[in-house]
Image 1 (cartoon, one colour):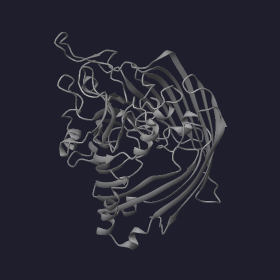
Image 2 (cartoon, helix red, strand yellow; image 1 turned 90 degrees about the horizontal axis):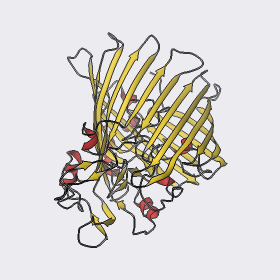
Image 3 (cartoon, one colour; image 1 turned 90 degrees about the vertical axis):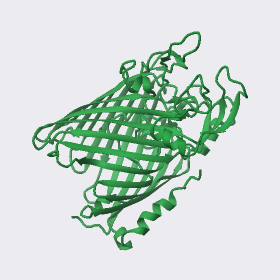
Image 4 (tube, helix red, strand yellow; image 1 turned 60 degrees about the horizontal axis):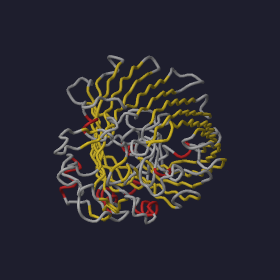
Amino acid sequence: MKRHWYLPLLILPLTAYAQPSRLAEDVSYSAQLVGTAGSGSQAPFWFTNNRYGLGDAENGYAYLRTSLQRSTEADRHRHWRLGYGADAVVSTGMQSHLVLQQLYADVEWQALRLSVGQKERPLELRDQQLSTGGMTTGINARPLPQVRLELPRFWTVPRTGGWLALKAHVAYGAYTDNRWQRHFNDHDLRYLYTTGSLNHSKALFARVGNVERFPLTLTGGLEMSCQFGGTGHNLRQRVGFGGPEYYDESLLDGVKSFWNALIPGGGDSNDGDVYSNREGNHLGSWHTRAELHGSGWSGAVYMEHFFEDQSQMFWQYGWKDKLWGFELTPAENPFLSNLVVEFVGTMDQSGAIYHDRTSTIPEQISGCDQYYNNHIYGAWQHAGFVMGNPLLSSPIYNDRFGMSHNLMVYHSRIRAFHLGLSGQPSSQLGWRILYTHEKSLGSYNAPTPDPQKANFLLLELTYKPRRLQGLALTASYGHNDGKILGDSNAAMLSVAYSGWIKHETR
């Protein structure tokens, strides 16, 4: 599949509707120069992760980023609203020297949006600047090009008195890391990789509550994703099957594959009759959030339960693995603006045993879930970065773990405590602190010899001079210690400038 197959779809909505002069108004532009330097072989964890793939595992990278964007908010007084964006990066010391980070077009009608292209999308139901990230879909990897139909903001259901609101999406997209996967594999026939893979995602969230009449709101929902199609390379036959040990095979079965991604069904090509499975790499999360709104302040608790298959999607083995979180937004003060505390636990994964029914032992044991790993697609990743929570280690670190060319998530059984703080002492000055303590046992298939621990720290200060509107200067310090990524200290400097084209304050 061609890398920019979606470009004609981007152009269609813009040429079919709206005056060209209107599309040139309310456009924001930005330029950002970022550089890092420090000691230690690995870059500080929070310099690399939760930056939409714009980072590197090793110390000493730099990039220049430029973008043009028009938000649909520019047409907020119209029924039909149009937005678009283009965002490119030139880098040194990173995996790719030229990156097309975003290229998209949005068309909205009433509460509904059609989004086509490659776009950075925010986290669901939590603080993006302070959280460790989502378990199924986070902000860690580069965005995928996709066609997405969505309710992007909570839409109040008519005739419910404002007590019920919905948010949802359904999307199909494509992976763009064919070259990266080939390079990572380096012609090693022992390990899996895929090219031309496709992606499907969907979600539905419901919010109950009316803050104008009662201070508590409850939100819950389900999101699911699937990697499917493409060509599988170096596939290995399962034990007891005939045929070659290693082979390549097309994994796309026409329209059926798209349907089996939407409604999990079918089977993988190398399953056979004994080891039946759903076609593709399916995973997802259940979400809950309770939020209390006070006079100028708010607090929330939330939970995300991740699952790789039906054994954890429902209550077959109990929900022992979760991300728990607490958020506090105090009343306006010069010291603290936001606080986030999270606990991430993925040690159980339905237990250590997996067994399919056989004639001798007819019991099915659906354990050993191997979070973010898959027997055909390798890992839940894009261009080396996991697409969920980065505390489950990305493949870009596998050289350090002795897993070179093996497209897998090594540290998947983890327990972590995380603290995020931010403040805005004045309109010119802001700060952010992230601290994470992590313990890992590796994974069921590749356990660590002993429990491994690590600490990750980020200190960040941003200055926006009043006399130079649009300019932002950010200085960051990052620190790692422990066995997982070793010891490192580094600094990051960022100079950014943003402005508007024909923008009028409304």
